[in-house]
Image (cartoon, rainbow, N blue to C red; front, side, top):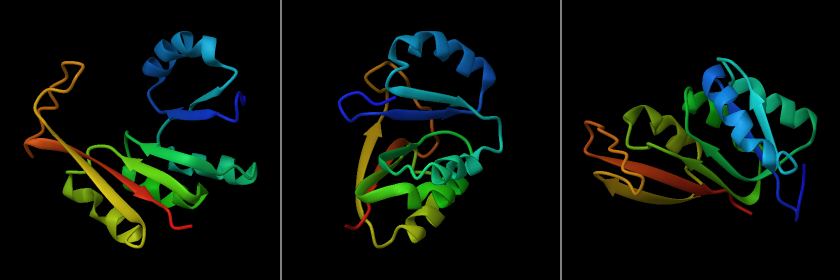
Length: 135
């Protein structure tokens, strides 16, 4: 799974989307581990604990984000990053509390993104937050 010391793991809960993306990702199977795991999937992180895997970057963008952050933030290497998409939602405040001693950077976007996607969030903009785990 590793090429040039790079490997990617992606967990998908939507079986239709997983099937759709599997064929597109097949050429990258030597560096991508694409896992289908139906909801609730936040305990998927236990599989990585059992394999002693730690991540440089962990991106959370899907369902049950608070639970995923709680169960997986310890898998991030010291100096590594946790990225949370759509952090403008108040329900993610618990993640901010949990990672309060990590360095935090926030990116805000208004309107349509570069792909033409209009998030349509009532909050008016969307925010992606990246935390860096202390060394």
